[in-house]
Length: 604
Image 1 (cartoon, rainbow, N blue to C red):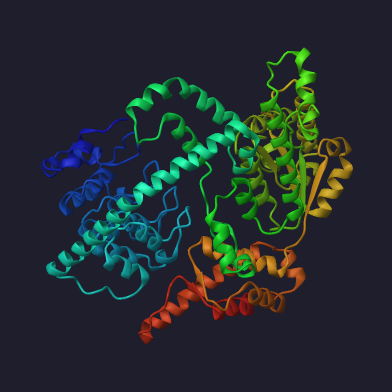
Image 2 (spheres, rainbow, N blue to C red):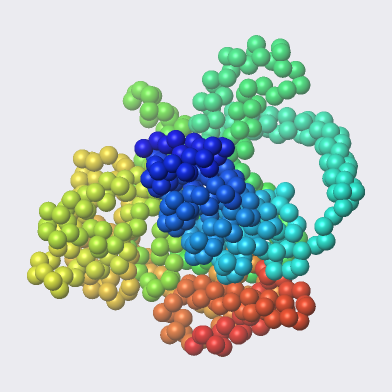
């Protein structure tokens, strides 16, 4: 259903109040458009007056609690589109629980207000209606304060309210004008400095591009170490050679097409600082000078992904070995194209270095088994493998599909086969991660039929078909995951399945030092800072003293999530206490006493 007449009237709402006196108005107020919006949603989105909102609520009182297709209540729309404070106050009076409702993106009305420059009055109303919203995150891990700070034009009064401190005094018109002049002067100075540096930077850029061009011509394989595919670069350059001569006459002082092709290839590597992906403990061990020098250069995408996982060095080594084999195979293919005649193949191969003379196809990763206790990083590493193998060209897509028994097993064998085939099709080109795979060997208590065995047989059949060449190379990489004892019994009872999974990786329990590094990374990712005294060693010693090895092995990485959740509660307690004592508290700083209190009260 498209917008009704009443939807359109709500966007201007000039004649809506007179229409509200007609009998049809009550029925119209309850109609939805194709986006699931009521006329009340439309009125809130177009900053309707309090009289209009009141008329719509009287005609359809349930409208205040009805979400649209993306889960937005009318109060979400009002907060997002800067509706007057009177409108928000009226909606809250009719449906106070609306302040606690999340949409499908996990956003509360306060998130919407903070990210869309809502007025101070609206933000205050939403905070008073649901104070806990100040510290809650949406699905992107952002609090209302995070969203407000991401907007450079946000009001300082709104930021102060979200931080829980008094609002700064209102600036006079003269003070506002002086502040704008300061910004303008700073921008002018910055532009002047950029202009002076432009000539030198342009010369440096041309020299760097020419150096890459010479490498591409003489030693193309050396570009692999910089993350540039010389084959793609050669194709892009050859398509521009014909136009370069004509263009160079008209583009003096500006990069040619070929130079832009090289520049684009370099930019795709995306320089990323080591410091952004390295844990605080690593930075402490490396030292400030070394760390800063390492962060200045371009980073390798695959190594960045591997660095994001703490520990598991034996699996990272396997990935690096697979990468080297892939690059060697790609280099051989680039030096000996498929179109070369067989009579010249032996001669061309003899001219290659020994490492490239053997005929080798591009490697494919084998299906795997991940074995480890809860929280030991099995799922996290599988997600990383999807991205890493896609970067290496081993997988067609960075797709990761996680399933369990209920996604594969139906009530009958036919249903089980159909569900298994459907899951395999959905995971094509990526990774299929079967969590708690040992449950496939368990029969249902309600039925004597062992439906899990049908799923196992279907997996075996599809794996064999892919290996025999009957399937294309988009067959997913399958990973079976589960707990050590259960997986050992399951694989021992299913020898045929075990043969199809030659690689088994054991995930050891995290040490206290590794848990400390994970906790620090998690805090930084969530936007928290740590007190200087909270080093890796201090956190590691606290974990070792306050917890037992058995308790940690049952949780592993989840210990860090529990610790962060508890620390955030301690921060909120300090903020409330500081309100009465008139002391400033940084809401984003976790101190040592926060961590100690959590461990002593909640950890064993």
